[in-house]
Length: 193
Image (cartoon, rainbow, N blue to C red; front, side, top):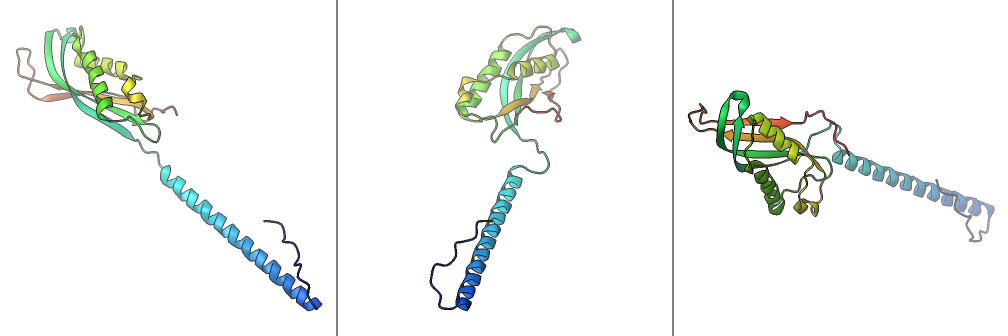
């Protein structure tokens, strides 16, 4: 509440006029105070609604998914006694959004991600199952930031990597379907702010 306004400085001819003027002055002051409080309450209510809209009561996972990015890779799968063989496939990367905006998905940023994935799949994966390859790709991309990404900003963290291996009928016994290998953080993993 604000201070009481100063008394009226207009001269009054009678004590009754002076009292009536004082009552009107105080009533007007109280009405103004009431309006200010109502305005403040409305402002606070509006602010609270905006905050509630920006921060939902339940925690929602927000992600940015990039891909599929086409790849070609070769592996020697000693665990299954398979000689060197090659596959076409695709990599899809999922980033958690941990701020107002997450991974900046643009032509130059996605080209940089594709280039990095191609660098990682260029050499033969020795003694590696498809699961091992997915693990290695995840490990190499976790925390990776291309120079092209920095100017866009964003707050994100690698959540998952999907390696889709496209099969072809061959002497090893592959079929013609696509098999997805996924490496992912559990949904309950706490994301650092």
